[in-house]
Image (tube, rainbow, N blue to C red; front, side):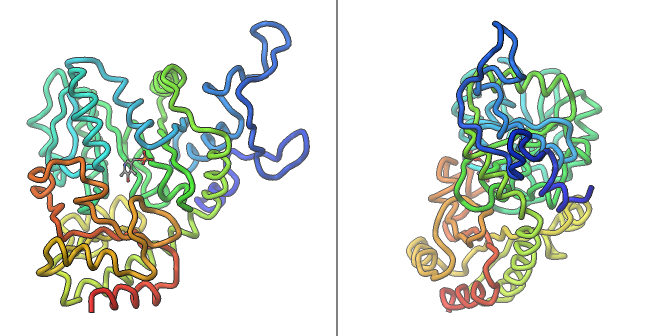
Length: 379
Ligand SMILES: *Cc1c(COP(=O)(O)O)cnc(C)c1O
């Protein structure tokens, strides 16, 4: 089955009791047992819920994976992966990560005795010198947030396999429509479902997708033991959102390209980050591992101090100034004070998250209106 058909049908059956075409919202915490220990496959809703189960099957299909597990947020999903580790274990990860991932690694898991190496991953060979017998996991994000660096998933997977390490990929920015890390050799795909998968800025959710049965069992054990499970209503909203994922992504990519081209030559722009440009340092890898280049674009404003950057960020008519991304509406974000505020200034600036950097999540509105909006704020 091709992607759009899977988005609409995979994992979904008409409800057997009524024929309802949409999976019902099973708003229940528990399930009646016939005799103690015998149930219809559902015991208690932290562990399993039919609405969530339908979504998990759908997500697994979209990532060409065998198993998916949904969590109450992207961070809940990341937390479960980190709980596979034990004190003394080491992780190699990127130096341009979602701020919340950086905060969790440094403030929650480092104090438990897990060591993190934050390195430039734009060349996968940079990973090699950091591998030792304590290394257990490589955690990558590609494209990165917010500077749109591209990491070669297949090259990372080759290295991970040579050393028997797990490779996890935060696939939030690409969505399964643009990139399928399991096909490139990754062991775990993580999504902030909140973003493109949900797509309508009305749900917070996360997911992990894997092929390995044992890994699935371990991660499911963590979900059920630690309790970061999403509710049935949110599962329903995401199932509904995913039905148009391929249509939305096509438009995100189309609008993203038009806007990137408009901004590239604009006199108020000093620098633009978008992997679709041929002069992007890892354009060839992006082209190899992604189906298109998406609607996430970051720009550095020319000669703009903090005040001028704030003025511009607050002057849009169609774009809204807000955290998050991947919804139908276009958003503008100021990483230094918003999504990446939890990263120390020196660390942030080293990777280009400067005070005059803005990140655009290009929505699916009519692109002429978006360009007009950008033109008026940058005039
Ligand atoms: C938003 C985001 C997360 C965190 O997901 P939540 O659903 O907000 O918990 C992780 N990684 C990336 C790249 C994100 O954009």
